[in-house]
Image 1 (cartoon, rainbow, N blue to C red):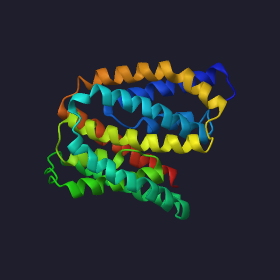
Image 2 (cartoon, rainbow, N blue to C red):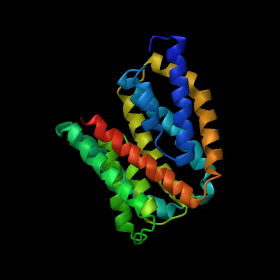
Image 3 (cartoon, rainbow, N blue to C red):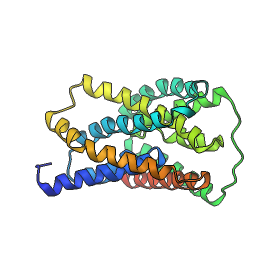
Image 4 (tube, one colour):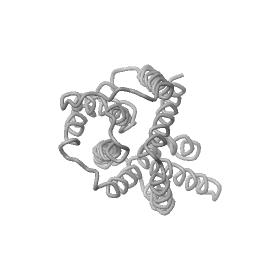
Length: 245
């Protein structure tokens, strides 16, 4: 970004919009932000800001939903994710990224359309090993695509938990994935002075958008929350599929 007022305005507007979506649904900050930021920022700046801002947005939401946190429910996803993230990153190193994005995108589109058409799905069984597996595949997808909580978001919905309980699982998992990525970026010296300035410029828009998104979330009933999550999963799949072409 060359620092013009127009580009800065685009950056701040996208930051605010992405924070509203993330505050409302609990995920998809990077999906919304990257679609606009990539027109005015470098890919490395986009990746770095998504991680930094993602930690803040998800951290605020987790704190607001702390009453719903259940560590006995959460730990299997974190344990599985800790294994899945490095495996996903390793696979990405020798595989075809376009094929991976296309496959995951097609799966997200298929699932979200099916769930939207058939709103009454039988809840998945309560099984710790299945939760660990979901956490592993979530980390795997996160390591390959940067989508930190997609699989756990889907699995939480399939478990039939209330909306607060769902977010109290997939948002802490996303925080953990973002934190691991942030440590890697910091250790490799990928955070430039320009990126740090942008980060500080965007903080007020990020916090304002997150506040508004959480306010809107409080107005949603269970059916409305489920519909928004499924539509965002559908959008995520379409974006991944388009990026693979």
